[in-house]
Image 1 (cartoon, rainbow, N blue to C red):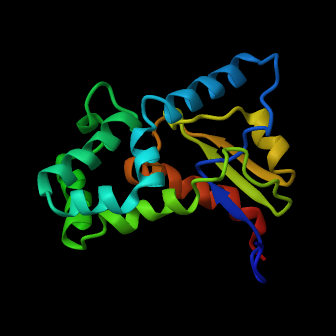
Image 2: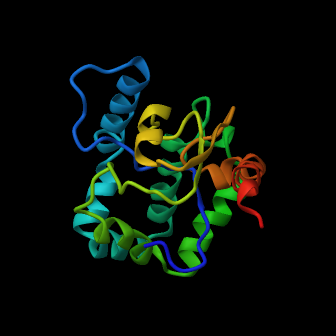
Image 3: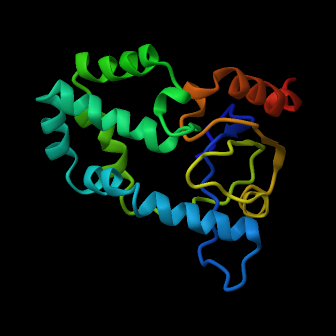
Length: 190
C-alpha cells in the first residue's frame, strides 16, 4: 500500500516464496519448501480451521479456559526455538500472561480473523520496491533463503540472521528483534 510518509519496513516473517517453485533447488531452498510443507501440513491444522471456520473455533475457545490454554500452548510448543518444551523458549509466567490476555479479553475469535481474511493468499506475497530490512530467525516456520528474499524485496537494505528465536520472535527474543529493527532501519533516518 505504501502510504504517504512510509520510508521503509522491517520484516521478521517474510512472504517471499516464488509464485512457482523451481524444479531444481539449492539446499537452502529445499529447506524452505520442507518448512513450508511442515507449516501447511502437520502444523497447519489450526491455520486451516481458523481460515475456514474462525467463529466455530473462536466460540469453542471462548467457552473453555483449558481449551484456550492448550490451543495457545501448542503454538508455543511447535513454533518456538525450544529443545522439546515451550518452556525452553518462554517462561511459564509469560505464556500464562499471553493466554490470559486472550481469555480475559475474549479475543479467540477475533485473533483468528486474520486467517479467514487471508485464506486465499499464498506465501509468495507481493514484490516490494520500498526499502525493506529483514531478520531471519533460525527456527521460524517457514524459513526462507536469502535468494528468495532478495528476489522479492528489490530494495533490501538489511539482511540479518539471528542466532536464536522462532516464529514468535518478538515474544521469544525481543532484545534481538529490537536491535535488528534499529540496525536495519538506521540508514533511513533523516
